[in-house]
Length: 221
Figure 1 (cartoon, helix red, strand yellow):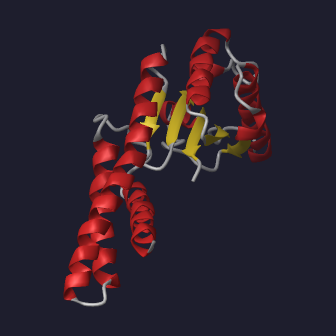
Figure 2 (figure 1 turned 90 degrees about the horizontal axis):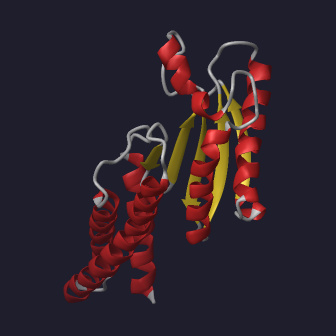
């Protein structure tokens, strides 16, 4: 039982390390990257914890070998699950302006505001219903996750107005996912307003990137 606990801890440590080392704004181009990283870090951490937990040299060596194997297997499985879900989701999305980003511990579906909403509106563009239906279908095929829909704006206009607008837009996207069959109990909505830009607000191009809705998909522990 101690070895199993060590390998589980190794997996958790590996996943956290992968996330900490990755810029969440950069999509991965290698569908096996997260699985490989999770396996490698899980194995290394499992072996290290095995070494620390042994009673003597032989026992530590045995624990290191077993912990490394189990930690690598569990870490790789967790990473592979996200890889597969991300690949399935990417294949089902028709609009190439929608980004699917694998952050190692969760997925981000990033949708620019310009394709989602008319100016100063919370009514979702009808052309995006198909892609949102694809996201909902993916969520229903991978049900063991929590979903957070986050609205963002640029810094144009009053901050309070932007905060309220971002929340209402997140609610609009979430309501479509729920209509398409995703359990409401899995979904949370958050409005961030202008507080988390991913580009400069000093240019029109930068402000356009900051106006977005993101769907965060985090596997349940």
